Length: 180
Image (cartoon, rainbow, N blue to C red; front, side, top):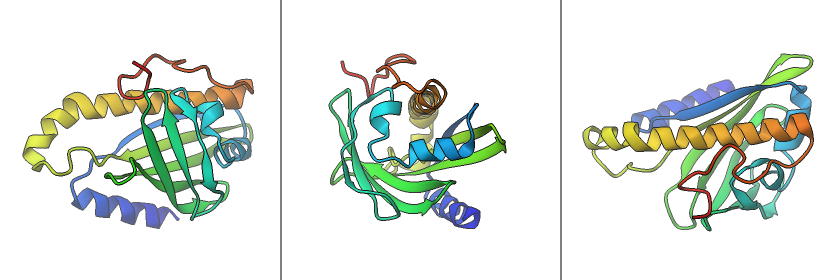
């Protein structure tokens, strides 16, 4: 499992994609976090920028659903690998557009806590020469994607610990995914 993720990272790295990740320790057992992230439509309860999360096929490596953001954007998620109790890998993007590779992983810390980590290999700017895209990536894409991922992981932590849906824009508005 870890080998497959490393191989995927090496392949995307060769294409010049630079990952952005966020993780948080959550004071609930890893199995509970897995139950949350593997439930159909889970983003409606846990994602601070998600309006709705309709599911077409669930669960498993052929799963796919949609994320309807508060901003009005709609992204499709197509699951590539599904590791029961550990996480999954997926591709996400607008229908007919480029896709980003995303890895969700749960790492147990002890009996009562775990780490949830989301890593994104963004597709944005991939058609630009590496030398040119580095500046907008460092100044805009990476900080905005990091802020987004911190909010998403924070939303899952909120729901796992409190047992109540995360309020929309709970950790601040996001220019890409919040309503204007």
